[in-house]
Image (cartoon, rainbow, N blue to C red; front, side, top):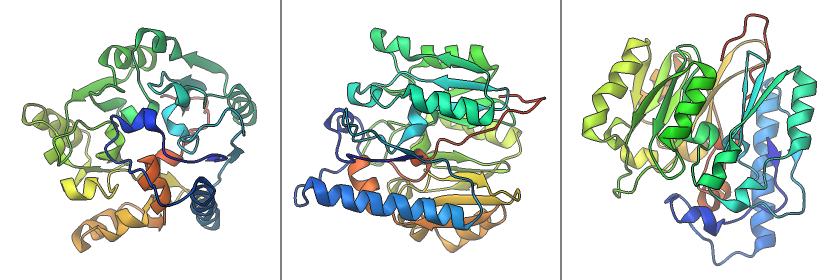
Length: 301
């Protein structure tokens, strides 16, 4: 996780992230203060529940309003690989930091590194686990096509990792293309939170069939719940191997009793307030965590 120095509204990403809302009545100092409070509370909550959290401080320069969302530029894999990704926003490209990459590789003994950011020069992007929702057990990647999720670069990822792709088109309740797949879908070990109504009719069946074929219990969310970031959750493990399903307070509040009961079959639900981060950044809990799958001798992707 990256503790931000200059969190704020990024106009470069707002053009295709309909979740971002510019706050004109609050100055930058107050925005930063609120974002830090939310970030620190989230880290404390995770650590209180025995989750190991590696925190890096954002650098003061260059200013990076979205540095709090590291999952878009880096992923970690059990076969000892680290992969970095091409970003659409020029501001966001500055988030990739060699010191962070090297520190994680040394701390957790990652040995291989693959870079896809060269495709930025060609105007092709694939923004990590924002663009891709990974079923690591079945080695399937789910991806909604958007300006930030290029099928050609997705194929490069699949060739590199051995994943099979399930590619589809999706729109939100306002008929706006979904900018990142992870706002409408979350995949856990045995379940999938998904807004199937956001998937275009011609693609819906193949997504559902793939999830069911891999034994995922589908927990359906509505288009309204998509906008309260119910899809932007993440299943993580504490240091004892217990499953936690982490989301924001806004997402948890909008769960129905039936949805909450269904999710609790697969882990403890934890949530924290991320109101400022969600509103100005257009991302939520999942976007803030670049989960580390530590290398194992028989590790796969």
